[in-house]
Image (cartoon, rainbow over all chains, first blue to last red):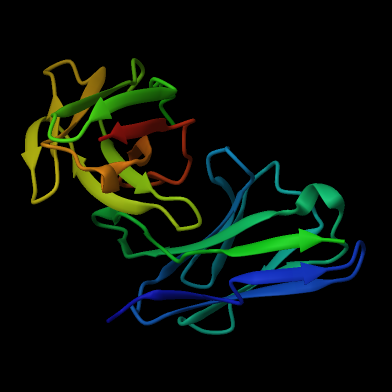
Length: 116
Length: 111
């Protein structure tokens, strides 16, 4: 089945130690998103790629970076994780065409990041 | 993006119909209304999307009045497995749509 896969499901890192979360998709969607979701809160958009174009949310800290080497993969890099960055990180994809806009998103099941 | 307002929580019983209403008073002409469902430790799942009147699929119906300032997600005959958080999103399908989630409604279905 076509899907959005996030690895690992659980990630533990140390305070200040860089960490990378990965997302892959078999849907061949041209838009990929990263969200942060803290406990009992709604997902918060960090940034998204429309094809190769990177779109950062205004309130996303500089500590968060992203890479999309090809259509299928997208990475979230946290350069110096702080305790406040402990959260579920969700990757999503959608198909977007400039003629019809964005279509509903398909989400992975997330990576839960813990900071020691 | 139009701001959305939903009840924080709702309780229901198995077999009942559940209606969750979302208010979006400043919805724009190009905005669509999309609902997602999220279970604990999972990503949100698309449920239904609509622009006006009524949309129905195999799991839910979406009712949108003529002024489009609100919408109602209807779940027929809920079961315990429908216990989840339901998010209403409103966004422009052309430039920038349902990327920003509101607070959501936590639905609890009881036996």
